[in-house]
Image 1 (cartoon, rainbow, N blue to C red):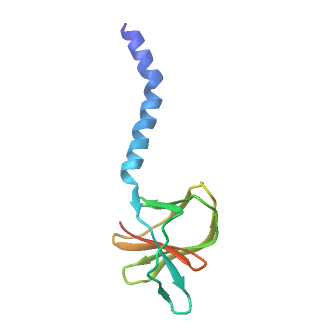
Image 2 (spheres, rainbow, N blue to C red; image 1 turned 60 degrees about the horizontal axis):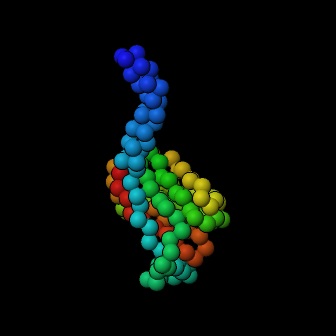
Image 3 (tube, rainbow, N blue to C red; image 1 turned 180 degrees about the horizontal axis):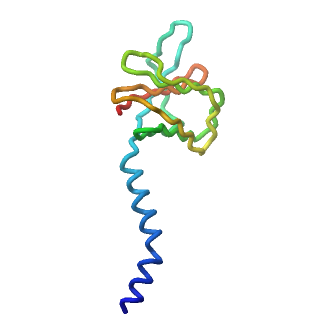
Length: 129
């Protein structure tokens, strides 16, 4: 009976390890609540009107920002700013529908703003490390 138990335990050990590590990733990953504003490049300000649908899910952990758009966003400028509005990262890329985009970050502890700019629309959200 002991041999059967040990054999079953060894058989299911990789499955249990995968489930435990997946749960740790979920616990460590935090959501970034995105807001949307119409960006007026002539006035260099954000219009207070907002759109109801945010087509991007954003989350982060200590070393990476994860973006998963529901629609393809071409020529998206991804920008990370610190509390003093200094640009820490800036990247122009295409975000593909239903594909997770990972952006490795090396930031010290503090408050930051993630901006995803596409044309006149700016998705932004605050996060802390």
